[in-house]
Amino acid sequence: MAKISIIIVSHNKPDYVKQAVQSVLDQKFQDWEAVLVDSGVLLNQGFFDYLKDPRFRIIPSGETKEMFKTTNMASWCFNNVLNSGTLTGELILYLCDDDLLYPVAFGTFWDYYERQRKEPQAMYASQEIGQVGPDGQTQIIGKRIADRPAGRFCRGRKLDCQVDYLQFCHSRAILAPLAKSLGTTRCHCEDRAEGYHADGIFMEQVGAITKVHNIDVVVSMNRRTATSINIESADTKLGRAWVLVKAKYQGLRRRLARRKRA
Image 1 (cartoon, rainbow, N blue to C red):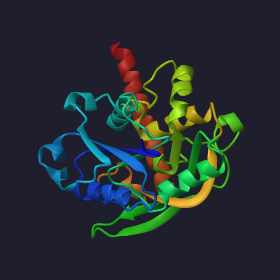
Image 2 (tube, rainbow, N blue to C red):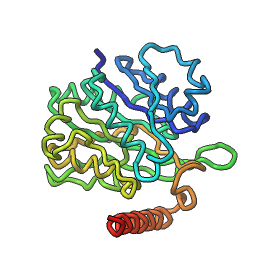
Image 3 (cartoon, rainbow, N blue to C red):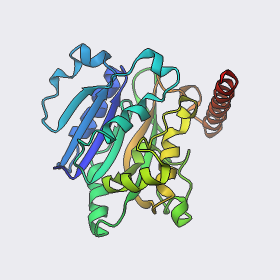
Image 4 (cartoon, rainbow, N blue to C red):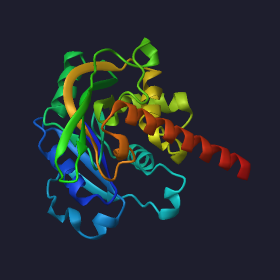
């Protein structure tokens, strides 16, 4: 059994996913397990054959192109792994293939969890935001600071669209009460129309049933790359706000269209 479990999703970004995987291997805290869920493209090419660390388990997602039209695939993959019954870690983290964890990430969450006598069921830490330029170099363009508790349970900071997956960590034990409160074991939002903030929806749901503790230590980098939906405006606050408004509008249009078809 591991103390920390991390789920990594991979969707044909060979350069970035290799860096994401390396950021897990570089963790100073060593008691972890990782499940890498690949869409099949890289896995079928033998891309991950180099990865010999026994703490890694690499599996195909089983997704299809048709599913992609209506389903948020990252959430779908997360739910499948969470419901598989194979994770053993007390704490669970998530990583997308173009983002990075800093070497202190696992240790930061676990140390806080132990210092608080394993009472925190959800935590979030600080994060840097990076933009990858055409030359492949990353420029830090912002930071998200974990300066106060979050979630409706403790009347804390809003999580949706303010806190990123990479900043977030929850216990495996919280999954059962979360499923009970939602009426489903598929806790991550799979609706593609909500894909722009599916992570926020999930975190708000956790924050509704337990306090989300804050840890002001920078543990990750949310990278805006050429394959990110918001890369065209990622270098300014106004641009990022515009991307969010546009995504919400597109999501609303898709929902209305589905209702008309029904």
